[in-house]
Image 1: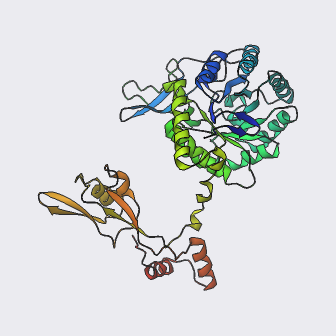
Image 2: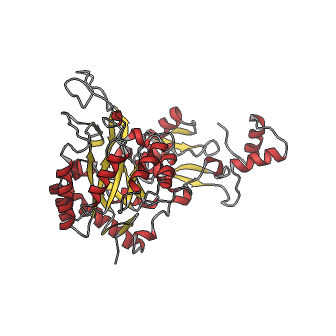
Image 3: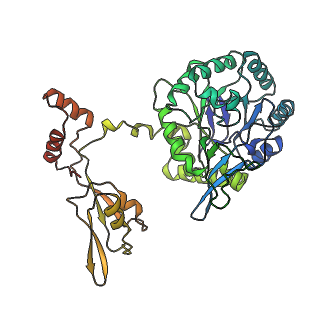
Length: 439
């Protein structure tokens, strides 16, 4: 039997799938409906300072017939009174004692304001608090949201205000709109946060209509930067997650966020160290019903691989994260084309000829062109395999002995020991000695 239950910084839920703090988690009606369908937890849409939202609020990127590969929003925090939200939070938790109910908070940067909202939140019976230090628009202009998350000192100060009065776990939600996400993460750790949530949305402008010259979303002809989410942000989210989970100074439980649309995406976040995952855009697109596929897909995969709990796979991919200086310079691959699968589209030739290293030839054979790799010139970049439309047609074949290693860091030590300067000539001699193709 597979057990999908998790514990994220002291917050327990029957599965790792939580609604992110966003429109789908805005009310008791929505959160209870999500729980009825099987969601493990919710992060209630951020409550705090009075706001008025505007029309329109969303813009999207569609690509190649697929809707909403990226979603931009300029929606602010909950525009419902704090009292209404707190009442509904308490009611929801009473109805769903086995589900995780986390409350996202954002108020002005005053100790008294944070103490007040935290104490009132604890009184609802909620399982945890998430501090919204990531909102990139609207609230940041008021000195909240990303304006806090972008300054580690502010992050630490406000988190300390919260943790000194909170009796329930506190997660700090980090903004990706920073130079180095490790610094605010370390600040949260120093302030005794129970865990982290990342990433919040990315600053963006979605594009311009070339007929009307309008930027979407348009509010009476005006627009602004907003928060970018959806499938397109997943690679960025995974990178920033890996930055935090591979930092030994942080070592905190993490709720992963950013472009998670299916169970495969969720597993990638868990393999990079996340305890729970939060989902928003996919729910806005397809509804709460996606939880069935999320649970079934993850359960089936784990059964097939022989895992019984998520703790067995959490972080298993982290050891593969390394600095460039630790890559093996002697690792050698070349592209090989399976002619029985080739459809003679010549995309590999065009990509290699114009965009890479000119090591694929077109050879006329029986009225069509055969694509053939000159292996002695192939640098193993893998572009041809990426553009090929036929799965398995182009493979990257390893040619080195799988034993010899030499990293850039080691090479620099060798040069220093031999009193060799780092010059193109000395580097070329090393490459020639080891049969490395120079382009």
